[in-house]
Image 1: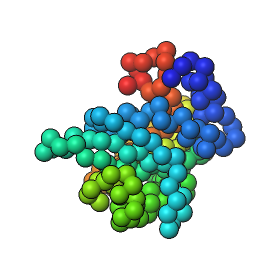
Image 2 (image 1 turned 30 degrees about the vertical axis):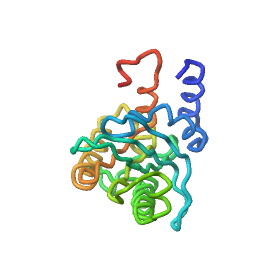
Image 3 (image 1 turned 90 degrees about the vertical axis):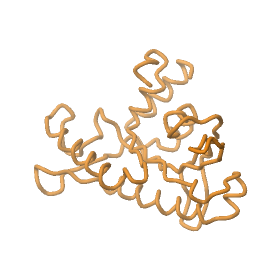
Length: 200
């Protein structure tokens, strides 16, 4: 990514108004970050219309299996606005819970992935021979800088409660399916042309 393009993307991520649609157009630059494993070839598709609605984007990647065979996989992602919060307090000052926006993204993700895995036309169109190769990839939402925990200062120590709650969710809910939750400023780190090592 060229510095000028990165700056335009950075400005969209840090804007105050919602910019998920504009930000999603830059995600093709981060395919290597978003695809688990080593891909020899990948393509990103920004929309997929299905019976449950419209998924934000998915990546079709050719991966080397454990049997040393190349197969096509599809990874579905939901891109929520950088301006949306990730976590909030659940009524106590000691626990945090995902915001409605994050839970909505989870629900969309599992429905869109399920629908695509059972859709013979989708599988054939993308050269996917095994329905199990259609997987949830993850969710991109919020910013660590100021949209991680609703109602709190990012410098405040209570942000660690949000981190713990999200890590627990990853361990008990996401780990078995390899779902990842990315913050938009993590995508910025990865694509920053001035800090290529930090970004990886």
